[in-house]
Structures are given as structure tokens and as C-alpha cells.
Image (tube, rainbow, N blue to C red; front, side):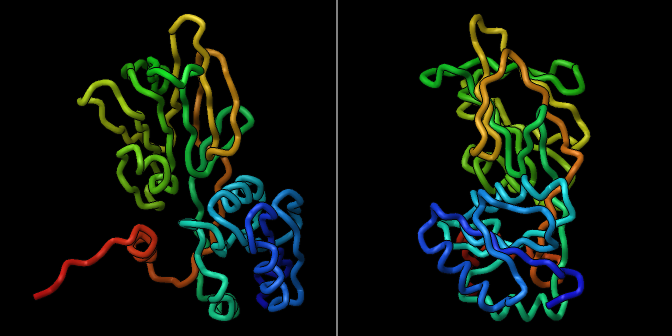
Length: 265
């Protein structure tokens, strides 16, 4: 299809209805492609076509972030914000790939210890029935304390996910920054904070017998002790963006979030 993408793989999510069926349809269109489930991903490819929802896409993005593999999503889930196309648009997508009518965007990711996230890292106390106190440090300097249900540390890509639901701003994915958003804070003057991508973020809790529940992209959950350090991941996710117009991000916002235009008189 394209010298840039000699080895193409189609990845489906067996837990999503019609995911494999649609993956097989795509496979028939690309004779040179491989097909396997999200639990059997291989790294010796050039382009991964993800057939599923945002969760499927996020898992693939983390897996391939340490490689040069580019990923493109076909949505068969609910919102599918990260997907670039619908399955019925296969012919149009293949034509754009053939004509090299696309761009490759590198998206910032977060890391803590050995785990990574494309969207966000969410920190909560172990007692979900009440708020907890979270002390925020940036570059080892204490910034403030939050009394809240939790904290979201988000990338610009994740600014349209959990962060948005918690009142955070929408950030263009080309902006090099991270967001810190409190979840249901106890005081009204508590607001989201945007920090440069190279800042080292540390969250501590000094509450007795309190640990931290930490979730990576809502898919990997760990329980840590009384602190966690979060930094920029050295690797990025490589997203294939169909079309070369620079304002594609805003078109996706209007489509996925159902933003309407004002009525012109």
C-alpha cells in the first residue's frame, strides 16, 4: 500500500461486539496485513490499525510507544474520541494512506515507575467513601494541599477525557504541558493547574494509614504507599492523523463533543 507502511497489522478487541467482524472486513481490503487481538499484539510492524473503542486504542498506544509503530483507530465503541475513522469509511481511509494524505503526531505521555499513560494518571485515597488530603509538590517544592476525592494528572490528549468531566480545560495536543485537576475539591477556590511538560510532579498523603490508589488510563490499577512521582515519559505515542489540515483537532472536537454553531441571522 505504502512504502512507509510495509507491515500492517489489524488489531481488534474480542470483548467488543462486532470488533473482530469489522477487523476481518478491513483485513480483506488489505491483503498484506496481519490480524490479531489486543492481547496478542506484536511489535515487528509499521502501522497498527486499531478496531475498537478508546480503551482499545489506549492499550495499543501504551504498548507501541517504545517503538516506531504508528497507530490509527477505527471506532466500533461508544464515543471513540481517539479514533480517526468509522469502519464504513475504509475505502476513503485507504485512499488517504495511498496518497500519503496524513500526518503523524507525537503525543505526550506520562509515566510513574514502570507504568505509562497516554490520557491520564488518576490518584485517589484507599477509602473511596470520603475525601482525602493530597499534598502537591512540583520539582520537590511544596505547592499546595488539596482536600478532594482525588487528583487527575492529564496530558493534552487526555484533556477531553476524565479531566474534562472534572472541570478541566480542553488543551490542544500540540501544547507541551500537563494538567493537574482536583476531583470534587472541598473548597471552591481550588482550580486546575497547567504545568510545563518537564516538571516533576509528586503527590503525597500524610494521613495515618492512608495509601494511594493509582490508575493509568483507567486500565492499570496499583496501590502505592504514601507518595507517587509522575514525569514525562521518554517515549511518545505516534498517531496517524488523516488529512494534513492543521486545524483537524477542532473539527474532531465539534464532531465528537457535538458542539453546535450559532444560528446566523
